[in-house]
Length: 197
Image 1 (cartoon, rainbow, N blue to C red):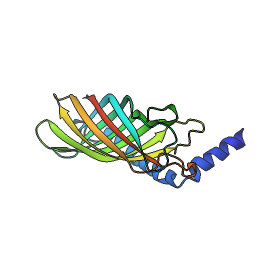
Image 2: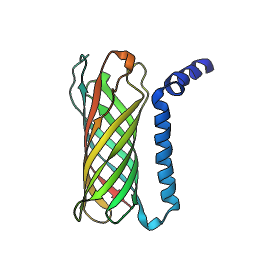
Image 3: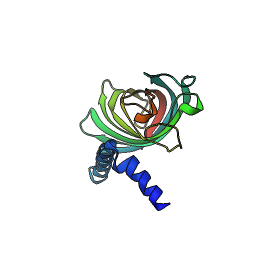
Image 4: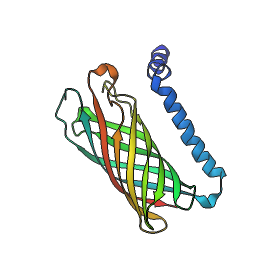
């Protein structure tokens, strides 16, 4: 059993060319959050956010089954680190149900966006940045373990703590394993609410 486990770890992580990038990304995210704890507390807010997902798979290979969009949910936590009066850095950790409606094409991720937030108007901010996702393991789903996306969104602040936001994430790599013979990128639209303490 130990040999099987060691073989899986070596194949999926230690010998995976994406793993080094993922580890650097996680290290960067952890460093940012730790620095926010040790920095000036008046410049950091912590919060939660959640809402509805509409996701789909944009195939550039043969489509194996019926491909319809999937409606589901996301939820997570965040830190809003003020850099200047109108610019902040927002690392997040969230769980998101994505993929398509068909069971074989449903993929769920633990995601780590790192966003730059820029104040456009008094209550409106634009958010953008990269996101890496770790797929929740499913046996023989032919999906890649990691996902990479770019994010663009708008945030409307109702008051000092409560806000609503919309986001679009665009997949940057194939969601399937290279040897699966399939090719598709994940596209996801989110609308939800958040609260910063």
